[in-house]
Image (cartoon, rainbow, N blue to C red; front, side):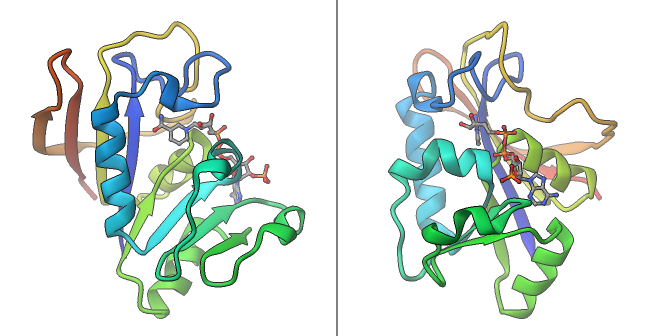
Length: 176
Ligand SMILES: NC(=O)c1ccc[n+]([C@@H]2O[C@H](COP(=O)([O-])OP(=O)(O)OC[C@H]3O[C@@H](n4cnc5c(N)ncnc54)[C@H](OP(=O)(O)O)[C@@H]3O)[C@@H](O)[C@H]2O)c1
């Protein structure tokens, strides 16, 4: 299973601005275009329950796209389940990857947030990082990864300036 982590951050690595849960108040339209084209291209999307709660209003379920929300309490979301399109799981990332791999999935788009990104990175389960950096600095907010012991090396595969103000899109391979 190839796991692709996708995120947008400020120059100082913040994935959220202060207490604001909606990233579209500051992420550029060019980043949104990249993000939604990645969503379009992938049939397996994984996120943490807090990201789901922040994004649930704009999530458009599709028959050929499975979204899995990681939560320690799947029961809490039982009314939201749409079999094959929106499911909730308390499996570990490795268990999830193994199960979905056996079901024939070959690529997973990991869309955050910080807690879930950190667990996948810590377990060396991420193969590619697609990171957009907006020309912004936020004093407060959540970092790309939480304060854990992590020591990963990456290799830059592609870099693209997305607009005049200097939003940058980076694609990294994670060395394993
Ligand atoms: N800038 C970006 O690219 C970007 C991307 C995504 C999200 N975000 C933002 O990031 C924020 C959310 O990030 P976050 O770090 O607070 O939360 P998160 O990673 O989205 O979700 C955390 C939740 O995941 C579940 N979880 C954690 N460890 C688990 C495990 N081992 N097994 C199963 N479930 C587990 C828990 O859910 P339960 O509490 O239900 O048990 C936990 O509360 C939102 O504001 C969102 O808008 C930004």
